[in-house]
Image 1 (spheres, rainbow, N blue to C red):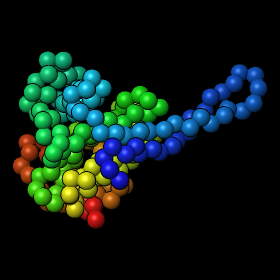
Image 2 (image 1 turned 60 degrees about the vertical axis):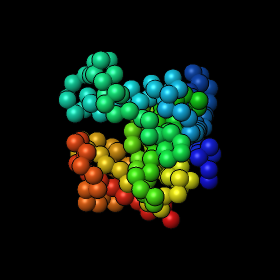
Image 3 (image 1 turned 180 degrees about the vertical axis):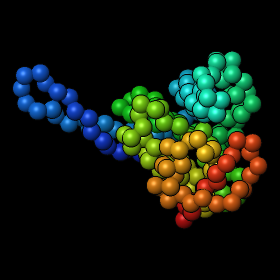
Image 4 (image 1 turned 45 degrees about the vertical axis):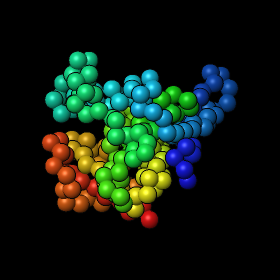
Length: 186
């Protein structure tokens, strides 16, 4: 599957009618596509990602100035072709997830800035995003994908474990990394 493919998953919500029949399920669809990290949707999602991960780390709300600094300290320039990709996921057309993948050696891709908006978690967005990121990694020639995360990002660690990622010894010395994961792509 190429990185411009659309990954769709379905879940359902219900819409009640006041005086008649029981609720009717309405299918909801995730679409995940490659998009430059500089678009307004991608930028808004990266800012939301920084606000959440920094806020959890500092245990307080994060200011816009702190988000601006985080975006400067951790630029996304390596998430563009030829050696990287940035993807945006939309639920029923609304941008609610993002993630990046980049080569760290000829056969190893790394996931970064993996984010699903809190109110969209549990709708299949994480699974759709991971599938698309893994596909993008394969298109870059990767045979495996790695990532690092923190202990407090429990939802992320659970998502990775559910999708076949196994904890491995540290492969980098990133200052905020506490857990390292890997998954074969072949």
